[in-house]
Image (cartoon, rainbow over all chains, first blue to last red; front, side):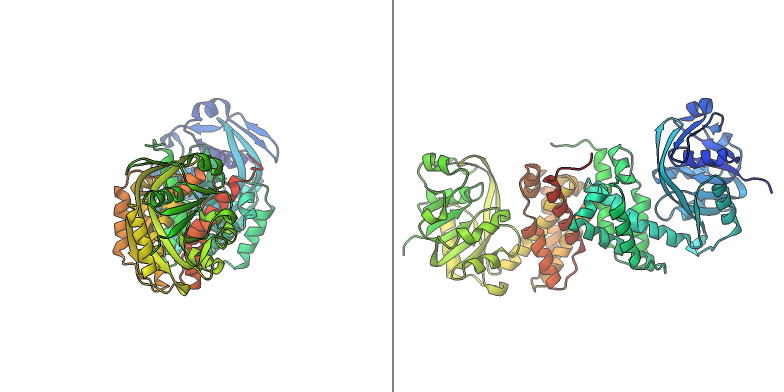
Length: 317
Length: 317
């Protein structure tokens, strides 16, 4: 069987890292770039990594999807705040019957992609990766890298472990990426939100790191309440997250090094925050299931306000 | 009948203003002071006011309650964050069978005062006053001044309009202060919280003025939801606030000049915030009545965290 050809949308801290690892493992990888196009076209990719540094002096770099060949697997590694671009980016490059792998946070993205590429198969991946882009085409991988991978079926019906899922998992494993396959992608997404919803949003609203929020009984309790709302929302879709999982997440956060969340980093650096996929979509999903999640809603409203205000000129001191 | 003698606890922007007005109207007023004692003892009080400036070169000033004569009406005009001092301050100066008038924001204060001074009659007043202390013994009255005045009875039983209430109201009216007497103090307190709870807390958490919160649909909706929770909590105590009142408060806020709330001013100037009386007590009251107020709880938790963090040294950047 012919090796799968990969196309990377969003060659940054995440897409650049995974794409480079796939290419290093011998797969054919094509990268769509925007600001870094000239640099990467000329000089390739540089990856500093806890797993070992490496360079890829020659890569297939493109400035527009029309120049790219059709690929078997499209990896969507943009920030979700750029997802309005997907209808232009995906259709020209996906092979008929090909795969779109969404490596993004939050909820509801696979359904959007399915509408854009109705003939493709959609996979979703939840990345536990700590990496930064430190310069054009230059990625620093600090820790972790695991992906929880599942297949999306319409209506969020659990897809089980398909052969398609296993093939993509195998490509990533050959590239040295730990992969956990998940028979129920929606359950995996809600489980990840149990951590993401409290800590990302509160870290922005309260200008706080994880250790500070855990040390204060008020915010510890609030984080717990937010987690309970996520668990209740998941239950509204028949996805059972056991109550012990909340305790596990709290202990896990207690044991983490003081951590600035990805949303806080986006906020501090003046980048748009992934509010709609991480808060808006879960909130609307909960509402549709008739589950009350007032704290998630309040955090969504607070974040939306802060996001808008950053780009406003203040009228008064 | 002998004119009532007044004792002012907390001679600042609020207590200094009302005390000076009572004295100017001919009543005998005694002022307890702390930091400003020497200045006021020597030079009296200076009031700049939209209603006309005046000086009181000679006032009865005291540095401790033990030196004060017993008074017929004790006016509690401290910030509620200093209420742990009340057991030392009130008993030495209140006349047997006298009155304690609590001019503070929030809920549950009259019951505390009743426990401290079991033989006194307790009145509560909600002040709509815009004034600042601009220097020792120097008050600048910018706008408004009305007080909504009610009598407290144990168990928050509505006291009606008592003769005691009317007498104190008459003293203030003689001093040119508009007074509205309220037969049900608890209802008046919950009504004031309908405005105070959303705007004070959110202005701190979101670093925002009223006009900014009203212009953004997300925070406008959040303020409305918070108001609905206050109305629901009041209903848990049989206090009916009509639904139209929320619309009235929103319109009123739309029509206000851009406004920095008193809690935001306290926060910005490094002073403790009145979190327990404005959020903690209403939240606990709602819980006791079996009314769910998750947004009030979340705001309480967020404010408590921010209050603590200001006085911490950050461990990390």
